[in-house]
Image (tube, rainbow, N blue to C red; front, top):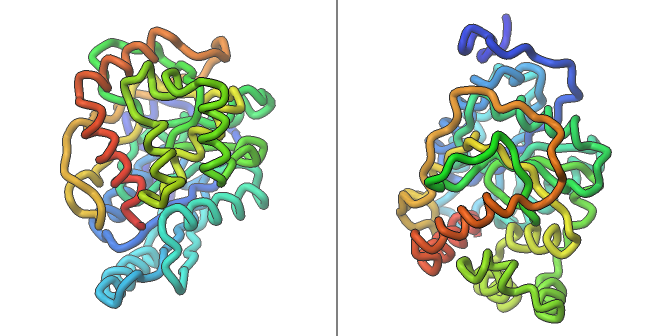
Length: 315
């Protein structure tokens, strides 16, 4: 039996023989979101060539036990992938520790990974883009990661582009990239201030990333994502993005413990493949300016609090 995605769009895209990366999926207590995430992944043209590893965090309270058990039961029924493995955490690690430990373990063994959280729905061409990019740029140390989500800016963006730093909604990296992750938020914050990079780090002062990092050091959030972004940014590394989003976040719907409801991040996923080609490895100023306009238009103070909540929905 072939992949679930093999007949999608009459197979206009030819699968390439690439070293498919493991897919790491991090879940907690949201069964519907997990189901939607997996359902979309199974439609990907490279699903049956890929190994899926699901990390199920342990319960924070006794009220979460039933939901977590339901998710684990569902995970054990998943098919359509080369292999499906379940890592059941006995205690609650929280999102940050769960992702940091899970990614660290996987890249050490396998060299490259694709990372998703349970509230991300993907395009049928997400895995192809990720694997193609991981293969294409694997030897280029200027590139630290690949990302699937793109903010819904008004402008038409190039097919692919680079931004300085890293991101967290459907991403991939190599061991050499993850080795640069600095877990000490205070160290990152001091370096950003000493190098007077706050304004650029904050997208021209339009998005309070520096404040998010400061809040992390003070225990106001437990975001691994802001530390991943800051680590990549300070190292002068770049992330490759698609010009059309290959990921949609369905988690900003009040379903998470610390998640608000908003539509400002909502976007449609691409129904066509995005080709990976050689482009200059440098920050695309046109795209960055468009994202800055998007942040101004969507009231970045509100957006920052919401994205903080989304990235900490397992806290």
